[in-house]
Length: 357
View 1 (cartoon, rainbow, N blue to C red):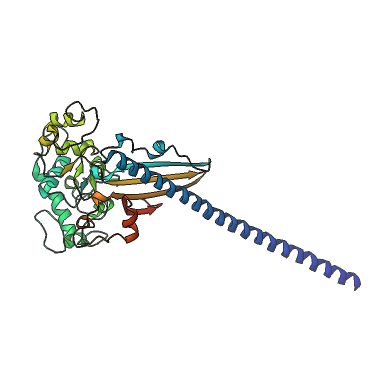
View 2: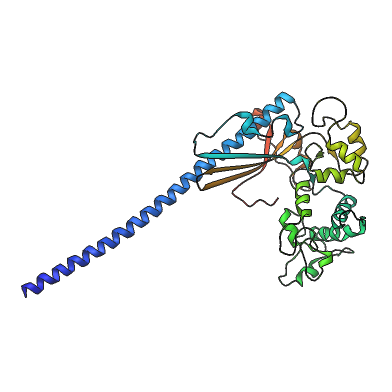
């Protein structure tokens, strides 16, 4: 009996040891996971701090050039690479960062282009290279885009209202408001490829869903944030060519830079004979100054990555009547902001997003 009792106690002790070992292992695993989780948050906060520091560098560089030069014309003035200009590196040597600074005012306000110009642009996109452009080819895309945005159910000659979209395999409705980002074009009839109408679709998105060259050119030439005239100094070559119309000689002259012997690689005045000639071709308003900026900041540390995306507008671009489209009133600056006279207003700021605008 004594031997059996001792054996039972031994088995119980061994079972208890095994159970405690399992519990300890489980506790250790949870502790390690929690430490990793906390470490990731700390690392993310660290990268976030570096990203906002880089944004301050970009704003500081732009502001300094505004104070020294009075006017921002083009990145070639020196403000296009804020990190090199400021000669600033991250405090942590393991951190790598980059700033992409784009003049958003070098693009056409997507809500301000006239019907004639937009129809003409779509027609040029539809035409084969070196072939004659039929202006009527662009009307379909203009009509469907307008029907997508308007609040009524009245279908334009070549447009499409809810009746068309309700009959699709996956039905949906038109939003009845201004288009808000480039990705939304996938939903509009004609811009994405349609196997039932291959000749009248696929302008912006191909059969496999990828962006066409027309979408890339459109994205580089139009903006959802800028509401003023197009800065000809930073306009894409595609947009400059469109602004020049059929005058290829004028296009080459504008790309070669301003008239005269100023030595500057960018235009400073719309009175330049080349720009005066260009204005006769389209109704799109143009200028020579940069007022709205897109800032994309990427920060890396090992495998960790953080992105910060901001749209900044200078005081000249921030007139209340211009912002947010029809029916929206720009919120006035606070007394504190007015006193410090901060040179830029943040129109948009996002973290770690797939940017489609």
